[in-house]
Length: 529
Image (cartoon, rainbow, N blue to C red; front, side):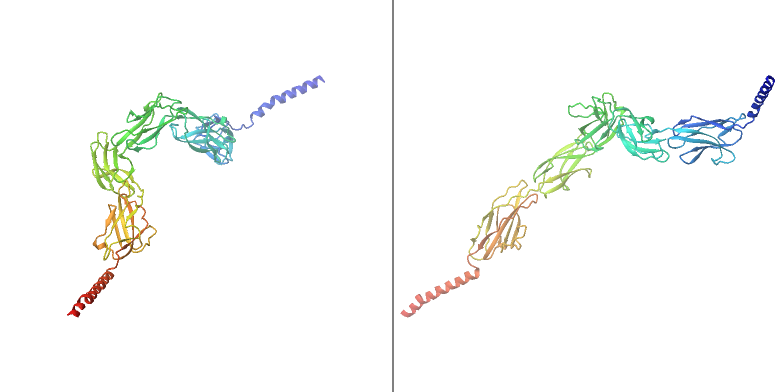
């Protein structure tokens, strides 16, 4: 038995000793390693491998259901020791998660002929695509691109510091998106930009920063001396003090209150454009920590302008005209409704002052212009008053009175005076009936006399009235052509008798006298003789 046991042991050892050579002749599979094995879209990756025996290989990357050739056979190399290596390539746009990278042999470029594969894990990231420097003042338009997010991921939000600046950002099938926003009020320095959605959480997405620089803006880029404009500053240091606004390098005058930035580095202040000749000037600001050189200066154009004092009134108003922003040492011609009324030279600062008396002109807007060398450089509007004068009272002839005796009558009409700052003249109408229009004037006047300066008027020979009943009305009109209401009509009777009746009466009286003379004088004398 011991002998048999020893023989069996020898046989087993012999079999075990023969087995290893059989294992060494088995085929070994190609194997690859990615460097690195995870990262972001755009990451540089290269591949190494072992047990590669052929000469030509292609490398493909799976992009969300499709394949993209990232390396061809000229970018891949196999050494004499069956070691495989490639050039670097960039991870294409693709959604977050694992994406297969496969190596295919030379028999076909079809990805189904893979000989080895490995997985690259794409992580989400964001980057600023505009502006390229990732810095600028408050209000800068910034475009952020997201890469490696989930395929068609929902509820993606873009954050600036602790504020959501864009939400529900649409994501494509490759996990890519872009969003644009304007930098909100924030203090000078670096500020965090982050993003996240249902799959790509904020903590998984690497933060990026935007550097806020100090900047200013103006409510307008041009104006005239004395005009109020507002400067707004942003991106200054939080609570920065001693801020000054600079116009042509010099501080502009403001109220006594010190300009100080708020905790977000913002401030604003209104100032009057300095008295300077027309031209383009640099505008900037500086503060306790912010130098004028740190700010992109703005250009402000001073243009000629006029100030009217007052800018509305009546005929005869003393109108003071102040001009600024003109060229220095020029003669400025002032026109009211295209008629020259004044002229004045400009001083070294391009300013002048003159006075004109507002002429008679219709109520409403009137153009006041300033010309230099025949060219209109500034225009303002003077508004003429539109208050209608009052209604006068009719004095004479009294209502239902009689004027004159016989023939054509030339009565004198008299009414009360009406006062108006623009001056007053009157219109008189006489008619044979009291019928008036809706405006109050006679429908068919016999006599119509406008522009009567006095408060009375006597008809001339051509206007004399024959015997009859008449009606008269008066209206006041001021120098701004504002028409007052017409008076109520009053009647009067011209003459006692018509001319024919008067002649007839004379004839009758004469005949009566003649008959009386005949009977009492002539006939009696005949009787006695």
